[in-house]
Length: 287
Image 1 (cartoon, helix red, strand yellow):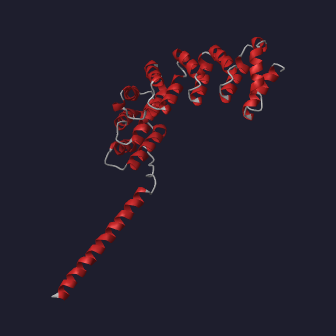
Image 2: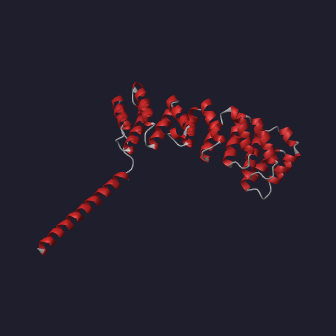
Image 3: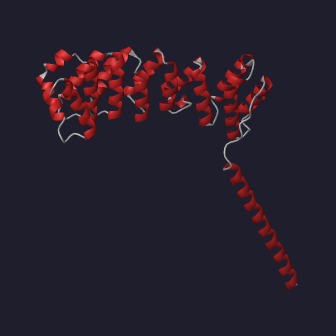
């Protein structure tokens, strides 16, 4: 009786051990598949190949790596496959379909392609997401980057609202970059440039934008910044460059307060890389 029980117990233990080994092998196999790198990219040679890739791209049952590889292949096919224009509408339709996919990477890539083609559907989706975060397909900073491919009045309006009330600093930075081509935003850039509490990267973006939108206003603000003892060295260096390249030489040469401020900026307390700007400016006016 005891021998029979031991035999049954041994048999159960053997089965349990075998099951553990099988589970371990399955786990290793799954891990290998997930770390084996991206799926191989297929080369499309005909419109039939393109149609097959479009099906793979839109198949939510496929691994995301496989779908991303299909998207990459389709991007190449747009330039290499003869008569691609005959399937172009299907390509755009597929991109629009996957632009709302559950995978952010796929959404971002497809929306990027659509925006480079100035697609109205993609633009509306991105703007809707910025106005209503519940509808957002991408983080606001990514959406603003893509909208920069085809900025217009609607995008500028949304970007200005984000600058006033940013969801995060990255979004504010990208909104400023998008607005750098908007003439109506010049007064806003003046405020950003003069605000010492503003991130210095944003102030640099503002200076660059004003250089294009309203150079005269940039020079006016640059003069104020250089005469402000408490402003930052990098912002002063940018202001010096603006005056050196585009300022009124005769007027600047007579500005004693400016020359005194630049001489002070050329002191040993200023980092060496910024002192170069001061020395170059002073030498231009024989100081």
